[in-house]
Amino acid sequence: MTRPRAAMIFAAGLGTRMGELCRDVPKPMVPFAGQPMISHCIGLLRNAGITTIVANTHHLTQRIEPFLQSEGIAISREHPEILETGGGLKAALPVLGNTPVITINPDAAWLGSNPVMALIDAWRPEMRALLALVPQSLAHGTSSMGDFRLESGRIRRGGPLIYGGAQVIRTDQLDEVAENVFSLNVYWDLLSEADGLHGLVYDGNWCDLGHPEGLRIAEGIACHV
Image 1 (cartoon, rainbow, N blue to C red):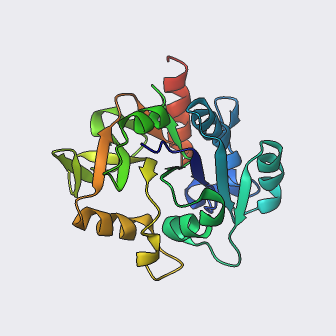
Image 2 (tube, rainbow, N blue to C red):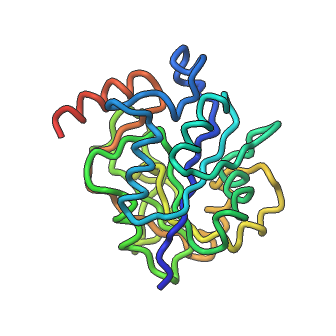
């Protein structure tokens, strides 16, 4: 079985929900628990044995790219427009390759076990994607009522589970989406039609770091972990 060895960090967002916190700082560089959000992602990936990491950039690139370079992270700059998650992943394929890859959002706090390790351990070659899902009872800093439900391990839309922002995904069918700017939701729907979209329920606390209140909540939980 091919274990994922490459990862994409989605770091190109504008940080609109952050307000003044992201006026001069790109969202992935906003501090959480003493270091930039994106540092926590890098740690999760490297602790899980990921050797190739790519981050896309767009907003305030001069404030994030030097840090990424110092960490040995490859950069996929999106200019003049943001390509969204699906388009961003497609644009990074020359570095990532066509094997299964991890994708992770920096604006989420995983306050339990390493979700990347859990995803890699649960990954099977017949899967097209494996998403880390969070029960509402363990999801903090979010008003989401849920995104998905699981039926025999396969994901269906509508239900109490929230997508946590980390997954393993095969990229060899990305070209089936003709557009260059698109959300991974479009690709997920294609995979779901073929019964290839799977889910893993995360068993730790999780928090949305994409807004100031979420940051405060996560800092409070982290102090007691």
